Length: 261
Image (cartoon, rainbow, N blue to C red; front, side):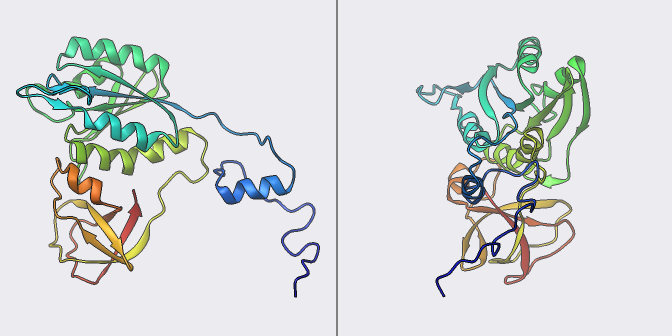
């Protein structure tokens, strides 16, 4: 019973891996078993996150009246670090300064994310500046959180404008940004793995797709206590996102699509 016969796992000449396969621990073991210690790999794309806002200060600083520590930069550096070489830049709420920053970073990055300024308020300049430097392909999507998300290009580089609220920024980066970084990195399947779980609450039908922050216990996806765009405590507690599709009411115990975060 302990004999492993030649050819049981695979045969000489079998195709073991295809281009665009990420090197997971299992893939690393397979490569090592064949003496392939230096496989040909794609370079990680370079990604620059530009945080914006006169109220934003570095996390190590004590914020003054009307100021906030930059939580978005810390989250996105970690969220994208497995798929890209990540770095941070900053711009105040000044269209001229934002234009200067985006002109520079778009020359040194394969993808740019701008956190904040993507809405339609008096001090939201992101869409206008991207349009002046390149083009805006779309602005606004039918989801919650993250309605103001925009996509454009500068110098042929993809630029995504994220909402300024931290939970919204993180959800949009995970749902839309990570697949972009994977595609730029040569992944053959860049999209997230979605699986079914039972929803642990009742959800009324809405006009938008909702990406709810949830915990997972024994196959049940339970929404965390706070789903607002600013909810950092709830984001820290969440393990996954549940996609609640527009126009569908969900009763407790019904199946929904879930992806890990």
